[in-house]
Image (cartoon, rainbow, N blue to C red; front, top):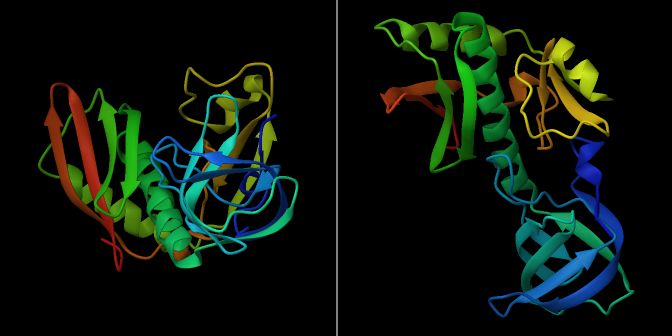
Length: 236
């Protein structure tokens, strides 16, 4: 049975009550706790996992498996199977991860305006490594400056983010890029940065002003792939 992901319906959820479904051992010998529902974000989509506490148990790593089950891996005194527990996310770490992740979407939002022919690919939104990659990209002397100007303009608008669940057939009307691996037989969560829709299961700021200043640090093309690297002021 898959774990209910509470962040999918609430950008800001950082604590919750849950029931321990199973308590076992992870591959590295640490304890692995599965809950019926969770406020912890598991690494995915270029965004890092949350850390925090399940009662007195320290959550150090959060993984989502192929069956939709979230594994809370860490050390400390685990709950008994079937016990009611309280979960609390490390808010400072969540804030960093959320701002970096949201900044990546702003970079892509800016790209959509200044380089509409570029095709987005992989992204990474970590303190030590923040970038979005593109194919079909032509880079000129003014590319970085255009990116920066557009990002600054977007952030100045104090855009409020919203979310909705839509059918596969509705995605094209909301999103510039629809990944090929999205399911066609169930609703997909779309996060709207103003009118810029992104099919995404990550955590997001409520307002783009919450990110802080985004700086384009490098644009580099190698083997047909253009990497746009960025930093967020106060983080990296």
